[in-house]
Image: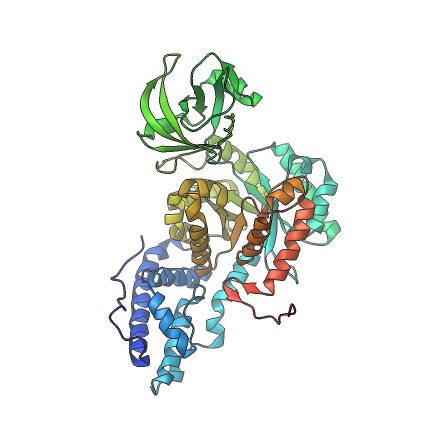
Length: 520
């Protein structure tokens, strides 16, 4: 729980006066220091790694700082040639101290030099972020700070040349999605990675991503004369039954002499949590619906939910099995570790460098995973790093505690899982929340993975869109960028490497790099 104090009120102040500006900053520093210390003291018992103390304290101070609207204060600092606090994330107190000390000089105070933070302290946050990134992903290439992660396709288990080329082109971390393939396939993939490391004379981390409780459509029944769902249509949502397993595995919708589309949910207990007017999104939001009736009698006599389609493409959308279901306004008290995850964990704990944690939402979820890992590794917990995938609004709101509980015990990173996150919080909020996650993680000196649909057209079709190139360039502010599998993955790695290398000469996190311009 984050401590809060009354917001600093600057509206009535004459901030054009350096003396008023100095007094305001001194009050802000005192508030940030005391409130940050109070929050940190509540976190302290959950931190076993003493080396994470400075990062946790800086995070607490950053959260205290951002309780205030600082925009007028920022504008008042600019004419004096001072830092506007816009790049304060990694070094909250040193940045405040530096500005205050310089203002003291401007105001003619005598003790100014005494409070100025040493250069090493000012850049200590940057050093810690680089250190934690190296712990998670290994050393960076000489020409590029940002790492590239690639999701391996099934053929990586049999095609060694593909794995070797992916690593040769510049990938420094390869991701295995445990929702697909078998442990035998995973073992062959890892064997190929280790062999390619030796032949390419480089290092490559293995991240294994637990599937988690992915909520999907089961068997689909469509009216005989209908193939697509349109706005205004009705969909009957029911609990999946064992008999539908064969239909689900076939991957096809079944036509039937019925009036409405019918689907079932692979995690049936969720249906009991839904209320009238609750939104239900299907297939990454391609079909958006709302609940009309929670006690609707299905044609076979069972009770289900009646959904009304509120958004769909004017051309209609095909309703298919094994597509994601999202419930943006419904709190889902689901265990993030399924029975399959617990089974897979035995393999992951002994073969992976990094564990990707799907659907993590609360600090208790972190503790649950750590306990399961500790049982399997016999006290070797710090050997395996964790990456928390931020996919829901609850995970966003709990992010400070997720960081403290995880990074307080082992190497840790955060993945911005933009696919599910966009559906859960709304596409219009994605960019805003993405920025806030980047800032918060930088304050905690925790590396971030920029994921989902990066250069997707290039990976799948061989040619990127212009918007994708801009997105890839913006990804330079993260510590790692993830590419998904596709037929043109090796070409995408080369292009992403080039884009990130170019952008690094212009931008480092939020800081512009004023390299000489050669276009004019």
